[in-house]
Length: 198
Image (cartoon, rainbow, N blue to C red; front, side, top):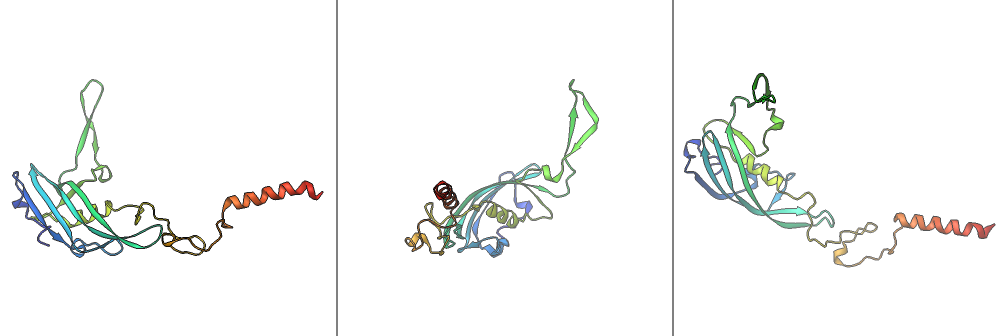
C-alpha cells in the first residue's frame, strides 16, 4: 500500500507526514488477531536522523472484542501512540568494548549485541521504501487488552446454567454445590454430629 510505504528518499531531516485511513486487510490483520470495525485512522511523522528514521504518531479506530466474562462482542475504541525507529538491515553488528577498572580499553573483550537484546521499538528496512504496515499491525496487537471487558462491572455468566447475569438473576440456588466452602461446612456438620451418634 502506498500510504504505509513511503520512499526513503522522501524522508529528510525536515521530516514528512503520513495521514490517511487503512483497513485491517491492508495491515495484514487476520480475524484471529482481532476484528476491526471500519478503518483505522493513521497519522505518522517521519524524520531522518543520520542513518536512523524516527517514526512518531497516533493510530485510532474501533476493534470488535469478546468480553471474557459474558462472551458478548462489543465495540472497543482503539487509540495508541507510535514511537519507533528504523535502521537499514545489514548494518554491522553493534559492539560494546569493555573497560577495566583503570579505564583502559580491552581490545580483546568485545561484546556483540544479540537480536534478543535489541530494543523492541527498533525495526529494520531494506530497499528504497519503508514498509510501515507490519510495524503498525504489531503495535495494534500489542495495544490490545489481555482481558477485554464489555463494562467494568460486567457480572458474567452463571457457572451453573450459563445465563447472562447482566440481564438479571438466574433461577439457580444461591449456594452452588461446587462451592469449596460448602464442602467444608458439610465436613464440620459431620464432625459435630459424630459425638451425638455414639
